[in-house]
Image (cartoon, rainbow, N blue to C red; front, side):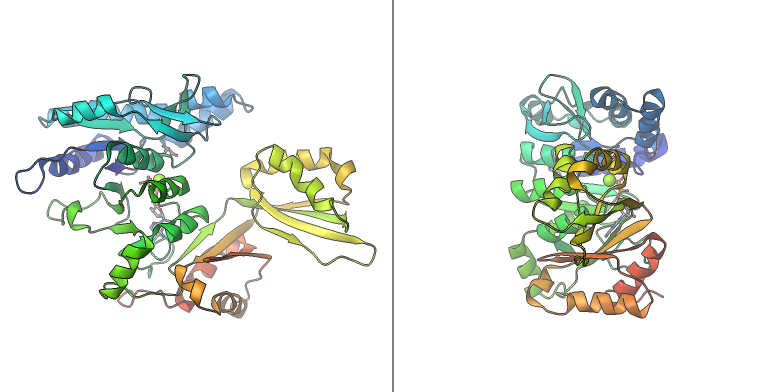
Length: 424
Ligand code: ADP
Ligand code: ASP
Ligand code: MG
């Protein structure tokens, strides 16, 4: 079981969580379940801690940043254990280094390598509920590490895989995965199931309901994941009845479709991302190697480039190159490009962080033409200008002005027939 920040925000909410955990541990017909619970920091807490780091030292050391920002989860894991104990349950916290959850690679974006859950499993077998702070692990050199924002989802899937859990229930503030963010489109529809592949793509283009890495890990390890709400009354159906959204394999999805429990749509969901920035380099020489000169220094600095367009060459053997990167990397990228200006040989750098990426995702588009053209037509009918396009086998993304984000998502949701029928 994993509970997100909104579910853990304050002792009152933690008491609700404790009751959900207690109910799951009690089981349905007298047979107790062994449960491990992964928790997030209270909503807003990690942002607050990140700000302290920025104030203390804008060029912060990632290892010390991890020491600070991982602390929110230490608080909530202890509080949940205390609350469960107050309800008469046996429970204890297992900090990242105590499990241990071993991670590799960079601090602040560590990846889980192994989880040695033997001691924790033994304690669970003795009837103790295990509470694990999400987001944190221990690095190769024995220091605390964190797994990137939203990383508690990945902690939960890693723990579920390590203990061979029957299921990994991700409790959050919405009751499942929707066709798009239900906070933007009131007519969004809850999905009974979504494939790992689609969820991976949706998460990677901005549907923050699950951290992208958690979906990749679940797919690799075959972990059954359910997304469901922690804000339901005691009379709501138990998690074992699968009231939320299941993340499933293609084969399981085929069965669900065959049994008529869901309709196959060409587009499964729509996501948006306002966290990218656009860079235009003007008058880049239109010759072999020019593009490599631009992107090599960015890659060396671990700056991820997403969309790229190279405009048609002008008459003087020059061209403009446009691409997007995470907004947070914009100052660094700009400095690097200026530094390599001689080698690249461009005219000017133009930047714009007032952009958004809108993506439509669906396995159904593999076998159906016209998904992209529907997107372009619907946006142009509303006067929304497309600044860049990128595609994969199951996704089409466009870059637009940030002010038009909500409108674009709504228009596309209707255009692909995703609007819920009963919604106003
Ligand atoms: P938690 O703190 O529980 O990890 P998050 O805020 O990280 O919760 O993720 C849940 C949020 O994801 C929801 O409140 C919702 O606004 C957002 N969201 C974005 N896209 C979707 C989607 N397609 N379906 C459901 N929720 C979505
Ligand atoms: N507390 C961390 C964050 O806000 C991790 C998480 O909640 O998943 O990013
Ligand atoms: Mg989250």
